[in-house]
Length: 331
Image (cartoon, rainbow, N blue to C red; front, side, top):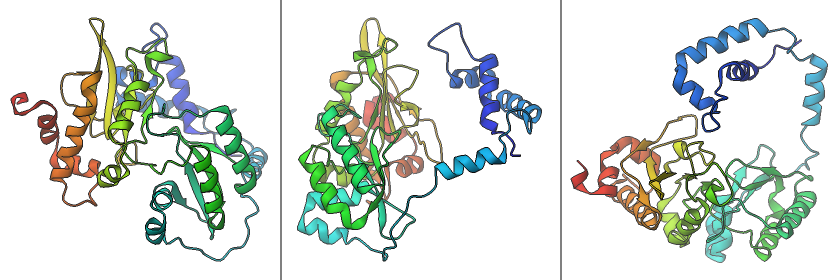
């Protein structure tokens, strides 16, 4: 018999003490903020000690059933194949860029996973038409063991693709407006629905995201910037994960005006960090120029093109970026 997951103990503590009196505060992060991480950690550990090995434990037979359900597909035995991305970029720059940005290594020789970006220039992040989804479903059935995944970054993933099938997949994506080669770059942003679709939101998110993709549309500009994650939320509930964006944008409402508060230095990787709020908010028309100033400050001060934005921010601290946003008078 296996012990139950500590996650259940976290959920039980939240269920006991989480806010139910205010829909804007019915979030686990609010509970952690109000109680303090040490108090929450202690209560979770106490809860786990009580339920460990009890009625919530899974039988080994159930674990075996789950494991069998997620068994690896019947891969072909292929010779290890490598991609000459640099050569492809010379022969076909857009295809080479897609190979460079939208593929991830696979533990099975001869295979990769493919990110299908839903972040076209001027588009709503994460949006796809019914016709496009039919195309993607066909690709998954034909080239990825009938498996398709949705990433938290609002993209789609074909998890098991033979390297030999990449040209055919790419051609199909091009024909259906799904071949944006920008995974992990500045235009591959996370964005919540915002005030256009959400009753909780204070500000619009999607139009701002669309304008930012237009601002940084040039592939050469995106390549110069490198890995940079922008995340946009239309309210403090943070469905767009703005607080862990390298550049985070939070929509707020002040006296009937939609403003956007910018934070810098967040990170959602194993080196997790909450971004630093640098100052007052901006009206929507001024946000793209503000982000350009942050990007320019990074490029001017990075040690080399190989130093990512988040690494430069950690090395330099907030002051150069605050000055870039607000000028020297901000001090």
